[in-house]
Length: 419
Image (cartoon, rainbow, N blue to C red; front, side):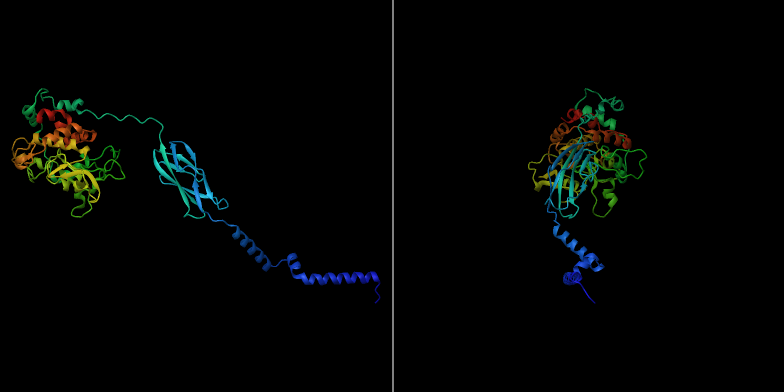
């Protein structure tokens, strides 16, 4: 076969091209026509490159760590995630959604008055977070606190005391009050816990509601207790000693403010023993510390003299020193007026009083129905006047016993009788 020079040049060029392709060859054709194996290699290469680019979250920094927010308003949380190349997404959480709701776009909405925390947590690493303190306030002026009702202005109370002389003093007034309150209906001692479910219920914290079940377990207002008034700490009726029986763990029991060992003793036929006007639901540990000691002010308000509450490891503001017991300031007037009642209702020795006449004195002598300290009790009566709870309780006790404590309705009579 004959080839001219032009054909020969073309032939040499094609042979040279094929030779060069065969040297680099595989990559060239595989790139033109990639197989499954090459596709997986490419994907792995891309993932490795992404890993090299990933930056871990180190910290979240909230710009404003303390926020005051009005009810009904919004606030947008501003923050920075470091380093800047890290994943910037976060999750939000409110510690109290009754106060504020936090949305996942960082907005906080004020719902109700209170304090809470909002936490921002890295979506990538939940160990990285920051918190902001939020106070939700109400910019409206709070309603004025209603004045404590004056029972002496109540028409039914006026009617109750209609035969008491407004000018009488001393033993004359005391005898008139005795004759008014002496013929009360006796409650059995065993029924008192059930009656205290009514008389010692904290109606401010736990008001009666419509269609309340008969076996409802209300919050109580306990004597000597500093944990009343808040549902997070207050105790319910079912925490009584009677509910627990011989088991430990109960919170309250019945306190004889006029100690039963000093006068009337423990007798089912003695009205003084189960008289609700001086029996109160009380913290059992403080009751136990008080024992049968008379009431007065202590000299040193130290931990060594302090009474501890039902937990047996939490100090209260009740103190025992040198044989006298000083209750919390908010209980002092209640104690004084209960004792004034007892020294009036049982001023004459009879079966009702355990055949001993009860009397208030300024000494430490507890024999023969004597009790002290009168001068301190008169001061406490002035320092801690009757509050809404005590006034309301007086009427509730009347619904069971059909008599009232005159010194709650007319605290000024204490000075007239005992001063």
